[in-house]
Length: 108
Image 1 (tube, rainbow, N blue to C red):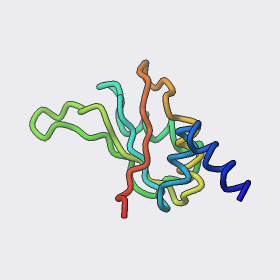
Image 2: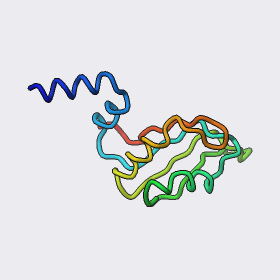
Image 3: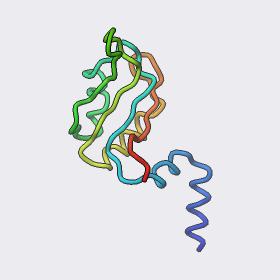
Image 4: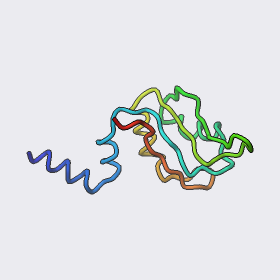
């Protein structure tokens, strides 16, 4: 029981640990707070050092103007790669902006 209480204590104090422990298997990341100048190539180059990317990196754009909406998605071949990318890139600066990285999976 001590180990379980210790884990709960860690999860309560550390939001990163809590999000990794509570989520289901997921290799797709949401990346928000992107500069309007950030494109797919920049996003891919920033994330591919953490693992192989299997789905085209997408920066979401307005359907009429084509201007970036400031967010995108990256999908890795493995959950482990996504975890590492999440840990390393969340709240980091990319193209002069602090980005937010979250897991982009449906909660069951």
